[in-house]
Image 1 (tube, rainbow, N blue to C red):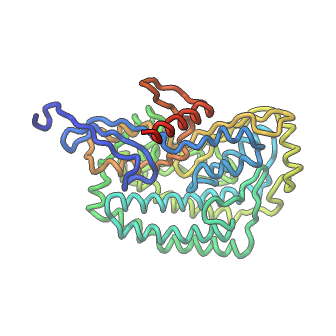
Image 2 (cartoon, rainbow, N blue to C red; image 1 turned 90 degrees about the vertical axis):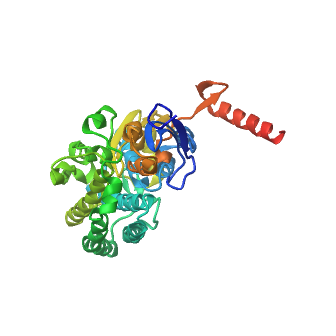
Image 3 (cartoon, rainbow, N blue to C red; image 1 turned 135 degrees about the vertical axis):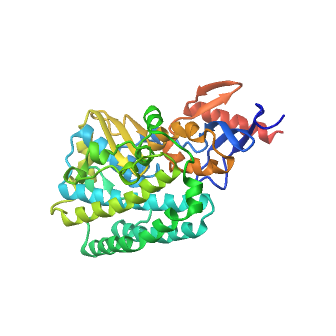
Length: 411
């Protein structure tokens, strides 16, 4: 049967694919080279972090929250500790709020530059990819000088932060800002002015403003479709309460928002410049004072034991809204329950719309265009057994894994 007469084929991408950063499976239904339908299935790297939190106290859970994601680990920490502070009514010193904001923006710069480089690699622009990887080293050097680590910084805590900004760190931050103001434009121009790059990103993976609202897109994905959504602007927290942060949307620069991969790229690279301005404002207005409400963990834990209630926090992570909700019970040391909704969970809902009528070659780029973090997203595991779908408990999952292993061993 000729192409276009209704004959379609299914092509799988993943769970391991050279164009994907993390394991995910996409079944593309294609008519020739054109994608007519898609079915996405995550579920390859669920770790049960929320379940493990029930066997730990809130201070210990900080280190679990940090490992939900490597690139936006500090965003998860801050959202978590803010939820705990909400439940336990723990105040945060002003200086700690500013240091948190600086770290959040440093992490945003790192995340956006990394994504932009990987996006270039996805469609074969290796020169821009290598330039992006070179540029991200500067912000990672500053993060290392500020926290001691390049990933999973270990500085967020309930009621403040664990490290202050020294004179040497302040000088490193100032030098980094000047470096990016001088050097980042070369990367931006190399990508946005290349006609081949524009051809690969323009009108690819389109998500209209109407569909972005319908499918609850968040973060840069939503802003690229023209939605003025940014929690730093609409629901300011930490030092953002003292700053003026406006959502970056394409129509302010181009007259309209197409909601394609190019617009997602543009929003992220412009947010790098925005983050540099926010960091400068925070450094200029950094208040004096303590960086923790209670520096002694034992006293802090006793304070948390008196808490009884539910705390909630939503912040603007590099990928979008990151929400943590936690339940603390009085006289109980461990967390009662903890729920995380990472931004990828919201943005992934719009994948089928982005794939419609696109080319097979664009599939990895479309998947990566929302900057997915599958580790962030996976909160539940659904097991298909004998044709039925059920939510497995920990004990049932262990039993099924053991039974499967035995069957394989005795083949």
